[in-house]
Image (cartoon, helix red, strand yellow):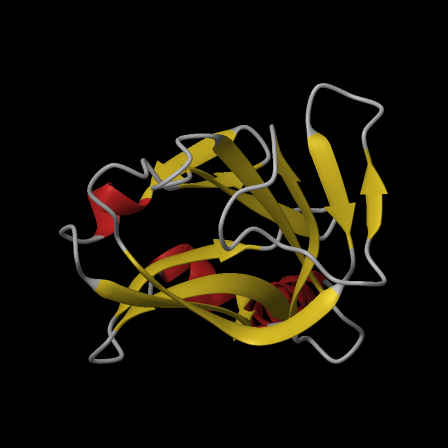
Length: 157
């Protein structure tokens, strides 16, 4: 009876470790993965930065759609600035401390460069990851959602 329980436990553990989950993956231009984090339980993560021209703080909120594509679901800022999200059908909310532009947009991948003054940070719940810690300023990075096994996430592979 005990050998069956041990085999069952090993099989269950193996199944859990190969179970695919959605991860946020950041890659360098040569395809090297520089960061892989599980998508938080609420399905959202954020990119905070300082707007390079207007010097206003910006907070982009991302999520995945039903097909696993990266979506920009909300952008928050103190005032409108060059290049900040605007769409004719966007719902703009001025009720809080920051303007909220609510116009979900499918991105698939987000291409960006590590800035010198932007202080870009990925926010996963309470965890904050500065992009400058992942790559040198000027480095191009690609951010996307992928499926990966729990084992791959835990082992960093």
